Length: 161
Image (cartoon, rainbow, N blue to C red; front, top):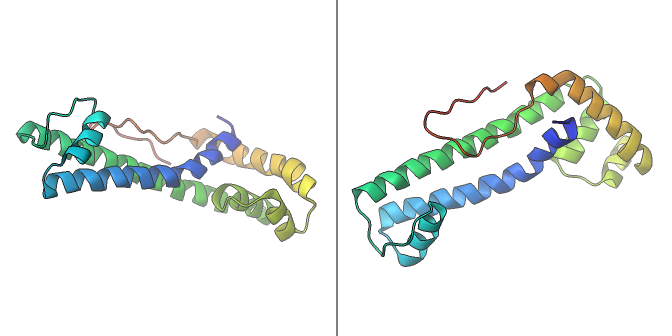
């Protein structure tokens, strides 16, 4: 995995967190508010089942609770990943590389915005400076790159840096 691929994961992480939190919220509403056809159908589809109707038994409840725990664990890993990436960028010695990486991968700024903040040309920022910053990041952290897992089970453990 390249530094660009690794850092680019940050861009989709917040969207993943929002979507998974919505699943968790809907499943908790289902448990505490009673089943509804609309929510049950959506959750059943996610869990690979056909909708059984507007009721469920103890086994259904257990499956919902396990799925909620799984989704919460994934959200936790996404948040840990976001924190790790931010901490890694902050450990880069060169302030201009930190500024470039933070602007592009964390704050999702345009190359023009980053170039203006650094008082460089857009072309130099996008090409030469970006390449140098990514090489520095990869040199320093490539041994600890990881992709956030999204298929956790209760027995999974993650090697975090």
